[in-house]
Amino acid sequence: MPVIKPFRALKPQPHLADKVAALPYDVMDTAEAREMAKGNPYSFLHVDKAEIDLEPGIDLYDPRVYQQARDNLNKMIATGTFIQDKQQNYYIYRQIMKDHVQTGLVATVSVDDYLNNSVKKHEYTRQEKEQDRIKHVDCCNAQTGPIFLTYRARQEIDAIIDSCVATHSPLYDFVAEDGVSHIAWVIDDSNIIQELTAAFTRLDSLYIADGHHRCAAAVKVAQQRRQANPNYSGLEEFNYFLAVIFPDNQLQIMDYNRVVKDLNGLSTAEFLDKIATKFVVEMCPDNCPCRPEQKNKFGMYLQGQWYRLNARPETLAGLDLVAGLDVSILQDNILAPILGIADPRTDARIDFVGGIRGLAELERRVNEGMAVAFALYPTTIHEVMTIADAGQVMPPKSTWFEPKLRSGLFIHLLD
Image (cartoon, rainbow, N blue to C red; front, side, top):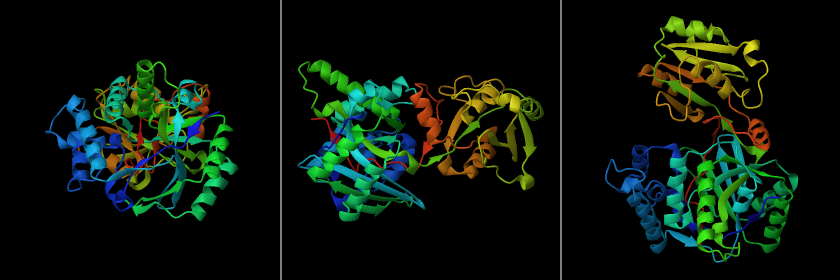
């Protein structure tokens, strides 16, 4: 029974929303962020990637980065770029990417639901990334990037949100530089707020789609503040984390592909021979890029040639939920035993390419020095939720959701 709550959002002035809104901090490096924010003092990257305003080469975890983020946010508040609502509201956030539309509820969610597993996870977090977001949230006294949550769609929630969209004027309505439309509405009617709150209590669970590190950090900050304030009531804002909550039937998961720097000392012929023991290997006709069209099939780009890899029946025999994921099949049959990549979380020889970049990006990376690339069929939201329900976790870099939530449109202050 998840507990959600309206909140007093800190949000940009409507005429500045398109200038403020920024991609999440973790989908770009510092150089890319600096280029994206060039000439735009309103960009929220000045808060979420504050190192762009400090000397090149600074350690991303230097205390000055968090102080700069806090100072930049406070300056944006002081100069009127951001204003805070006077009452607690819910908000609706719609994204349109070509013919894909997804509409979610912006709310805060109880940290206790994360702790009692009413908010379910499907990934492990990395300590250094978690600590980074803990320091960022604590120093800014704000959750600046929403957690991307999902739930099994319910008609009653759809009906309420659809009615609000039909009867309210948008707060924001703009198209970002990547062509994705962002539209938002305010829900300030107390009766509708009560209806939505009650409807979400009738769900069994919420699921983290994207943002495991941000979510874990929000919870750790809440625990720290509870410890510092043993008489806390539970109503303080730090007891809740910022989220956008979408029904599962509206989500779009793209492929999350792999590139590897070398063949682990093998010749091309030796490498292909080893793969052939687990997969049927075929050269793609006319050397066309091979995008897998179903599970258990893979594309591979090696020395300027595309191949199709079809997992042999014996390779798939007896696999459980997690081992049966395509990312696991690739890891357990090629990346680890043949290419020597035992831990893809830490091995510098492997890199990951989101499907939004296309197969041409895989070709480019190999043509410019990587040894081999693998194209995967996307993980499904059903697989994500089934594994989370079973209390298991997925391998790293299993899902790439698009479109990405923009940061800076809704901020949750912790007091």
